[in-house]
Length: 64
Image (cartoon, rainbow, N blue to C red; front, side, top):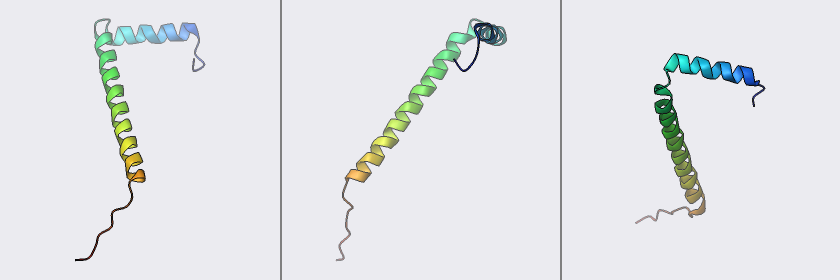
């Protein structure tokens, strides 16, 4: 996993626990999850809009 050994991963986790505290970690994880979900939803919406704009024939303005 990214070229990290077991000892390095444990050290990183310990630093995170010391820095944020054990009670804050679930809250941080929830916040990250919500952010990732919002990003995915937004990217799906943009992709859908692009696909529908490509499929729709161009509208033509008629002179009156």
